[in-house]
Amino acid sequence: MLDVVDVGKRSLATYRDVAPDSQLDELLQLSDRLRGARCMHLSATSYGGGVSEILRSLVPLYNDLGIATDWKLIHGDEAFFQVTKRIHNGLQGAPGELTEQEKAIYLANAQLNASRIVTDSEDYDFIFVHDPQPAVLAAISTLRDARWIWRCHIDTSNPNPSYWEFLAPFLHAYDAAVFTHQDFIPPRLPIRDVHVYAPAIDPLSPKNYPLPVDLARHVLEWIGIRTHRPLVTQVGRFDRWKDPLGVVRAYQRVRPHIPDLQLALVGSLALDDPEGWDVYEEVRAATVGDPLIHVLTNLVGVGNIEVNALQSLSDVVIQKSLREGFGLVVSEAVWKGTPVIGGRVGGIPLQLPEETGGILVDTVEECAEALLRLLRQPEEARLLGERGREHVRENFLMPRLLRDHLRLLDHLATARPLAPRGLAPIPLAQASLPGG
Image 1 (cartoon, rainbow, N blue to C red):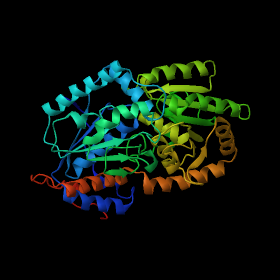
Image 2 (image 1 turned 90 degrees about the vertical axis):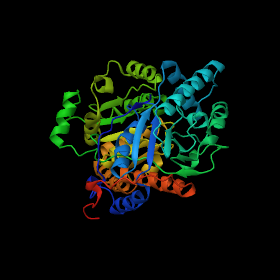
Image 3 (image 1 turned 60 degrees about the vertical axis):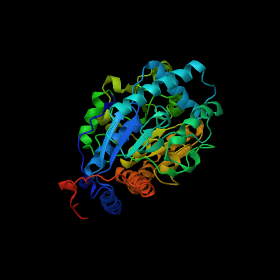
Image 4 (image 1 turned 180 degrees about the vertical axis):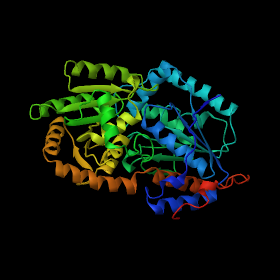
C-alpha cells in the first residue's frame, strides 16, 4: 500500500477577497463539469520542499470542489533517493552519468511502487506524477484507464544527455506534461500534449498568513534573531543549486558597510534529498564563529511560523539560485511586502519583472551591490515590495494554480471522456461563494 497524506479540509470560499474574483468564479464553472471525477497526486515526500507545500493546499481544494482526490507517497530507501537526487541534478545539467547498478536500483523501486499502486487503486481518472522520482510509473503501471500527467517542477531546459536518454523513453506513456516555463521543455520530449503554468503559494497557509508584528518579533527573538538589527534571509533547501555559500560571500562583502547586519540561512532537510546534509555541513563550516550568521533548519524547530516571521521582518530576502524551477520562497517573501534579490534563472524572473518585487542578479558581486543598495534605500525597497505583492496576487496564488489544473483536467476529459459515475454533490460551503 502507498502511504496517504492527511491534508485535512479547506474551502475555496475562504479565498474570496484575497485572490482575484475572476479566478474563483471560473473555478466554480470548471468544477461543475468535473464533479465526481477521481484524482491522485503522487510524489516522493510529504515535507521539505515546494511540491509538498503545494499539494498540502491544493489537494483539499480539489476535494472541496467535488473532485475526489488523494495525495500518495512512493516508497524508497536511502539508496533510491541517492539515485533520484543524481537524476534530479543531471536533468538540471549536472555532469556525470548513472551506473548500471544505479539504474537497476531506480527501476526496481519503480516496479515495487507500480505494484503498490495497483494494489490500492481506486479507479482514478487522473494521476499526477510529480518530478523524476516516480516518473517511470506511467510506463510500467497496468492502470491504463487513467489519464497520466507528468508535472516536472525543475529546470530541464538543458539536461545532461546521459540522464535524459535514460529517463525519456519511459515518458511516452503520459497523456500530458506540465512545465513551469516554456524554456524548460526538454529536447525530444516523448509527450505530445504539453502545458505550461507556474506553481503558486497559499496565502492562507501558516507560512503566509499575516502575523501580528509583535508576534513575529517574539518568534524571531525566540530563535536568536535580534529584531533591532538589520536582517537579510535566504530560505530554501540546503542545495548547491541554491548557492548558500554564494549568499554568505555576498553578505560578507556588505558586512563591513553595515557592521550589525544579520544573515539567516534557513533550510529544510528532507527524506528525498540526502545530499542536503553535505551542503548543510559545508554551510556550517563556512559560517562558524560568526555570531551574526544564523543557520537554521526544520530539525531544530524552525517551521512555517518561523519562516513567516523571517520573511515578514527581514529587510531583504535573497534567493540566489544557480538553477531554479520556480522558487516559491520568492513569491512568499514578496507577498509579505519584502523585496527579494533573486538569481536570474528559471522561474525567478517570472516573479520579479522589472522594478517589481526586487532585483535580479547574476553574480556574488551583483548580489552584494543590490543588497547594500536596498539596505541603504529603504523607500525603494518598500516600493519594490509593494508592487511585487500585487503581481503575486494576480499571478501566483493558489486559486490560480487550481484553475490551471482544472483547465488541464477538463481538456483531457474532453479528449477522452470520463467513465460514467455518480456526481459528487457540491459541498455546502461551496454552493454559493460570498460575492460570487
